[in-house]
Image (tube, rainbow, N blue to C red; front, side, top):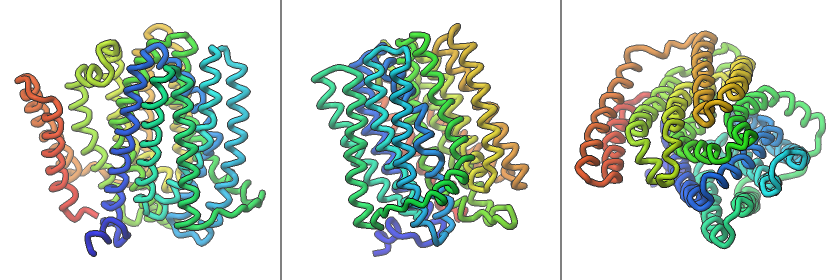
Length: 482
């Protein structure tokens, strides 16, 4: 059946991108929704102070996770997307290498947690979350392999299964014992079950994982992935450092508020994650290493246009409805986080704008430039957080993040367009963005009228999504832009 083939088989670049967008979009939407519901439930049940403690434990554990990943997931995509004959051997080597790196990372986390000045309950939670990092790191390896083969429907399936497991564990176990330890245990056991299930499926559907203990290959893989590991390390500094510093100053309530609105921003970034997951393998496959240029630059141009077309309505809608969003999700007690949320929405727009250029640099073997940009941003972020958080708490953390992303985004755009001689911002590009902006503003105006007339906020939201989706389809999908 043609309809079934369209959603399950790769036929051409345009169809493959649309197919992958559908499956990744479906999985991310269901996955994030299923994960957001237990998170909202957890935040409400724990309260700002205890959720601040959990956020500190989670950020502390995640700070070391780059050692377990070491950029090997992205390296696997780059090798497999180019149809290298050794891709299966590479997968086997990376799998066992990541087990060793994961165990080493867990040992480091355990030692660091025991030596930390945090409360005992935070230390115990960190130790449990180290198990989650180990399992999730291996799960992500399988997901990246699916992406490299353009078979993201399998990633969609298992993301949904993992999210359902996580939600069930939280809703069943947390009311029995309201503790951050229980939340950490839910993360660990859901990832453990997910890893076991996914391993059986992969061995049955694809290839049995074989032990390959070639130290020479492992060292070469580590050497090749080092630039990507550095990028991930600096990126983790952006996402973890502010929460760790807030926790170190014992601003647990502020940390809870800050991370609560950060979870909302993470949910609003779903389209950016979907687009990155779909377009990165394609960018890797169309890069001509000998000529040092993209074979089809129009694909990147469409990636950027898609990204901004998603960002504009999300930004405007969230700015207008920020207070309502926070109160609906978390209650009135979290409204003091609204100024920080407004600042983070600026960060959100910069992520949508800058991520395509960052992924382009990684796909075209310009990781050294990305490393320099991220290193500069990490140092800047550290300095700004240390200066601003003691004085302005979560507001200072938001401002520090915003300033960092302004520099990162600007430098990524400059170097990507210069090194690859890309002409992106032509009239066709701006025309599409202006149309999206005008439609978004019109929809926001009517949404405000609907809400002010005491009609449903949910009705206004879904009506806006439907109308904008139709415009997006006519503007991008129906036109032959690939």
